[in-house]
Image 1 (cartoon, rainbow, N blue to C red):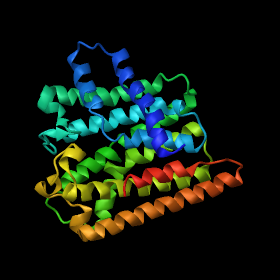
Image 2: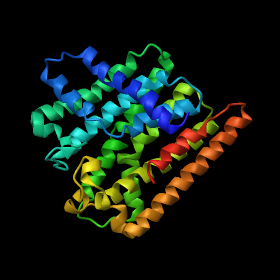
Image 3: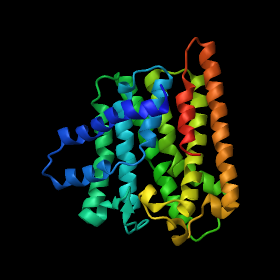
Length: 298
């Protein structure tokens, strides 16, 4: 299956699932549902759930087995964006081409909507009886770790503390591996758990995810300088406004472009290694779909 076919067939099914889980669990008349659904419905690239489902497809596992994990991942990502946009943090007015949640519902409801999405993610995973209890426990543990105080939350803290300070490239990469990369890595880890992939294959796929995450952040930093606000759905120039350390600020714009390509090539090598391990185990792995996802960052 090509990436274009995947986006035309699998992702609309997932999108329906994503919205339906909220609608069938909460009352449509409730403010908390409206606020949560507002940010989820705003769309976005859905890179994280697409990566999870594409990894399942590459490992020849029915993608429907990953819908609850992919939805939980997207709920947590959306919660993090709602909180990121708050006046106490990045103070943004626009997200995914629409007014940010707190601009529509106020700060208090926006905070609670984020809290609701975070906790609902684990409720959804816990009650998915299409997965074994052991897989559900492994997935919830991995997601909690990725989104928690050692990874994503810690990355957000380090990002704020790093404002107006001169960071090294290693320090910047550490922030992004936690803040952005942790949830991207979970996407691949979740697929490996569901597919019961071998340790050799899992290690290479996680390396792929790590390079993917860094490439994603470098690309995001580049677009903050040269991107089109109407396409991005958010204001550009915000990194400079908040005096944040970015790859272009440390490496120059040209250097950031070079670093981006380096990460993408490293990711491709990891997929080649994963496929070699799969072949030795008699597994047919479709790495072309995961390679195609890298093209979205070029």
